[in-house]
Image (tube, rainbow, N blue to C red; front, top):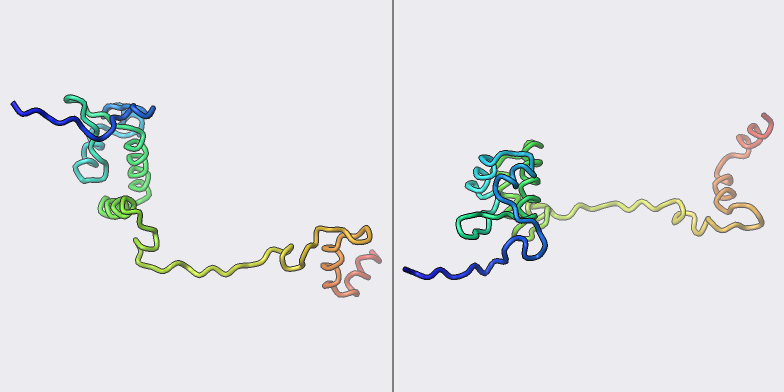
Length: 147
């Protein structure tokens, strides 16, 4: 009889993560065992770590299963999920997956940056208030003071 080599993959639970059976995984994710196995067959969920004849799943399996179920509920097809997961496993960016360059963002300066250090007070008055009031026509200020 051929001797089987021990698995080089660390077993779930060795690093403090949970060890879940397929039933426990499905229950934790709010789905069925049948759905878990179907996602494995389609390559959307990695197979469990085997210990004897029992498969154990870890927190990474649970996170991935929850992500697949959430995205599927949002309308992503299984084919598009497979493509996204392959890209994620290859550490591709969203831009690489979409085949687009990074968007050009126009930087809009904050008021404090536009007017300088406006938070400091000069002569008991806020520099910011004085600067902003200088933009308002004096006739409007006169009307406000009269009322």
